[in-house]
Structure formats: C-alpha cells, structure tokens
Length: 201
Image 1 (spheres, helix red, strand yellow):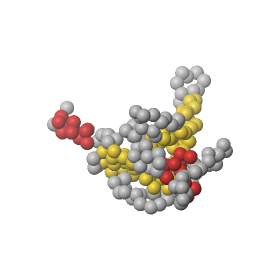
Image 2: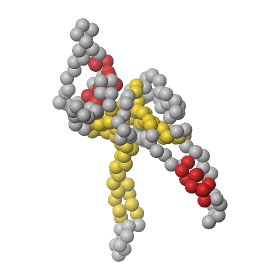
Image 3: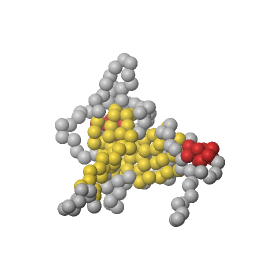
C-alpha cells in the first residue's frame, strides 16, 4: 500500500455523512427549490418544525423482472418494473398549522381559529382527495449538507398517534414522490467534499 494510511483514514472520514441535524419544509406544487441546503427557505416554503430524533428515512421501493434464457441458470437481463422514492419522518410540532394541514389533508386557511372562542374546528372526510405538494428535506453534518427537492409529493401513509404522559406525541408520515413534468421524482442538491474524478487505467 502506498501513501500515508492516516491520510487515507482521514479522507475516508471526510466523505461520510451523519444525519446530525436537518429539517423539512412544504409548499404548494410549483414552488421553486431553495438555492442551497445550507440556506434557510423563505415563503412560500413553510417549516415542518421539530422532527423526532429518528431523523429522516429516504426509502427505495423497487421491483424487477429477470429474464433467463432457455438452457441457462442465470439471467442475462433485468428489467426494473417499479421504482418508488419515499421520505419518512415524525413531526413533533403537532399544533403547527402547516403540520396539521398535511396530516389531515386540509388547506391551511381552513385551520384558522375562531376569532371569539379561539377554537380551531375541522372535520376529517371519509373520502379524502389527492393532496400533492412540494417538499424540501435537508440533512446536515457540519459543513456538509444534502438537500432533497420533491416537486410532486403526497403523504401516502400515516401512523397511529399516541397521547401518553411519558411519550412525545408526533405525526409519523411517509411522503411518496411522484414524477413531475420532466419525469423526475427527487432532485438532489448536495454540499459535500470535492473528490477527484476517476481516471482511466
């Protein structure tokens, strides 16, 4: 092995990402992605507030079909038949208007408290309509950061909500990313250490 092994170890550590911090924002579809994962998003983006220490889970759900020629025992082609991207997180600020809006699929304007009583009243429908929105998720590790822009996403799964003395109530949601007009589901914007381009042998 050539070179200083400690330099190699340090370099390897520089190239890792720990989800030490991060956040999530939501906006109406059509909202432009923020310029950088290290820049605080502004209107029309609404923050989702505190997220549980489980962080953000970026999910891959894929199926494939293998084609094996007659007389062979291994496939010579694989066709992807399903490719879905999801984001899962638990929102702790359950009284935030933006959070209630996405959890219950209700426009934020319908969640304004009554001017006299201060009560916020709404009803959950048995026949919910599609509720696609734009999403922006950020994972931060020191000066490194990763941003995920989902131009067309929808809450596709919601967990039970527990109200308990020794447990924080939260909304655990899964957001499924749908293709936009260009056929893309997730746009990545990363600030990571630069690495040299691979060279041919």
